[in-house]
Length: 420
Ligand code: ASP
Image (cartoon, rainbow, N blue to C red; front, side, top):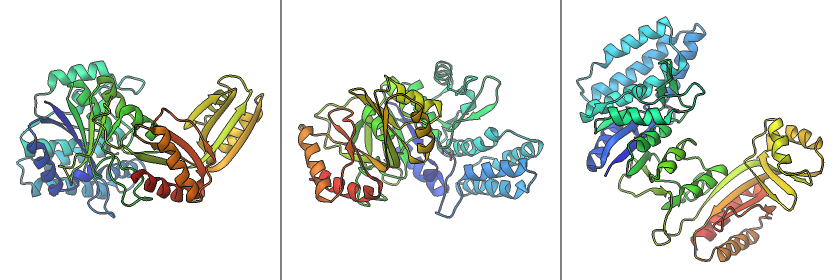
């Protein structure tokens, strides 16, 4: 068994976090590869290391006093090393980095140093190999990941157990390059795919993917299992747990992922797998909400006309549907103005409905029809007028549009009906 475990910044915010992660990794012999984010916030008011580094770069570029911000970053890193009593001369490396910054460095290089030090520290704490992601994760000139080369190199260089930094790799010219923010999830998924791991574990500060947005439903519980296809549908309607590039490498390689909490490491969290047999599954009900949406429909415009018109004005729809010569797209309300201008120039008739929220409900029962009926009647009873039922993605997903102001009420009513 091989598990690749990725730890987010909140899990590694201070020395206690590193110790907690050490205990998790040492508790399971399958855990022989760790991928880490930069230390995150210790308190609500605190700064993430990555944010400090972006700020430092910005000050340096604008000729401001960057050294003070650099010192705040360096002090945090050094304090973790000191508190863990490691024999790692981090002050020396930090001093070298400071002189590199004063001579001039790229933004990607500087902001990647949070993950670099995080991985160095964890590797030294565990006595595991430190494998720099610059040595294995390669970007192509167009900015995508060269998976063939990256996977081959990681297989060659990784001496299990190892720790590698998330968030960055290097390009063909040897320069450090980062993913977009939150990209350590992708590094973790790539490492798992490269090594053909049995499991990719994503440790974060929530005990899995929750049934509903906890801001709206405080007692929302984690969903126990989902398929990658289902997760994909939820993400399109606004669920944000992972960086969007995370799923593809895992899905392509057939590797399951578990999202779990560093603070409740024995809780099974949410398992996401390519397929799940009916027997494995329990009630996997959850919902995702995306607010501030508008729906556009175009009738008799010709096949693909709506999507083409939107793309011409650079409006990216959440999704589009087509049936009986009528195409419908959901877009952010603030893109409506541009979209309507583009549609007015098309042949066919268009309609617009604004101020909506989209809700995707994923249910898993042997009688999905009965579940849908139950959910719809719960909405009716709570006084929410369903604007439209958009598209059952498959027999287990219901996609609804409701008036935006009714979204919290609709979510409550649906969540309650899901429990029964
Ligand atoms: N440290 C980076 C960020 O804050 C990447 C990550 O944590 O995944 O965005």
